[in-house]
Image 1: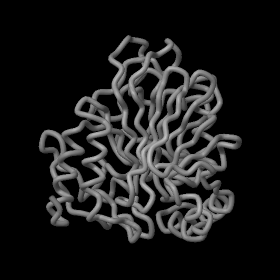
Image 2: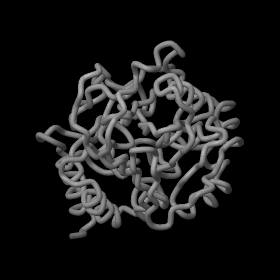
Image 3: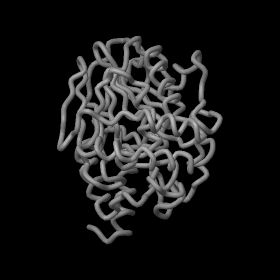
Image 4: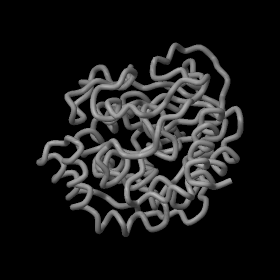
Length: 313
């Protein structure tokens, strides 16, 4: 979602995988979205007893879920003694539910939190992950430290209750670990690469690439989603192929057209998607910041539309 935007700005719709139109659907961002958790419009999704069923398997020990109202994605990677979470939700309450849900799912605490970019619906839950190592693109920490009021206003403008937005912005925890180029984290048998993508959707875009590894038969080792399968995939205990997973942040959006606020660098966006495809490869699962899991063809189609619009090669 674009910072300081009206939630509907951005680029015209384009055809995604199989020619299915994607974009030009602002209602997907402002209300309930098919396949996403259904909440009260302010992040009040599931109760504690049903959170586990809302996580979608992508690979052994790698999951994601679609949060309510803004259809933002949060992802997670199970390590040997802890969990890495990708983005933290739109507020402290939502972040707390994410944290508790992952503890119930994996039986391990969240020890690492990675922020894919600077917008409120992806960062305002960070305070819920007390004690976790927080990572972001180089420069994001300084930006967030000075942007609390901007984030609060953006959250309220998009429908968050004022008190919740104020609390979450006041308690925001900026990253303590800045990624200038690429950083590799080893979580037991999983290798996770954090890659600074430069300015594109935002000024501080970061991709999270989870390379293939062996599952340990624990939670999250069920049948994974195929690209484009959406959030209907659930864990059922069957063995499955272990694929590379790329958490794209809002460099890729599926449930609506790509959002570009005043902090975007649209002319650089196609190059960022070229690099994302090179990092992930043709067989990876690409997890958008909003919407269903997609494949390389969808990312390439989005890249081509942006390139044509902005006259880049």
